[in-house]
Amino acid sequence: RVGRSRVARPFDVLYGDSDLAQSFARAANIPQEPGVAVKASFENALYVWEGLSAALRRGDFHAWRESVLAFEQDWMSPLLRALAAGEVARITLDAVQEEGSRRYVLTRAMLWKLWRRSQPLASHTLV
Image (tube, rainbow, N blue to C red):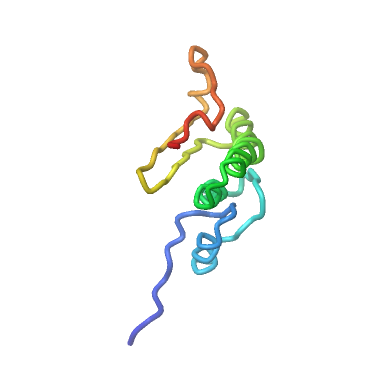
């Protein structure tokens, strides 16, 4: 007897603008939330932001810059505030591109590295 295979649920909730990620979330029965939110009831949330890559594919660098600014202001700033307040244990950011990827991990203790000057998100891009 062939049974229906189960889809893994590595995340508690999905946030973001990716149609593909939303399709996988539906298949795995993972709740999807519009916009950014920090909720203590979600231990492991996935945020997928494709606005940057879509703008690059179109060659629209103004849209790319606006997308970086929106990501920093609307998504990362609330997460950083939650991290500083102890509401979030860790933020892991994977920046994936065809040429390679970078992973950034930030914990609450790392916020105390006063000797490192903070930089805007755009300064860390691969482009």
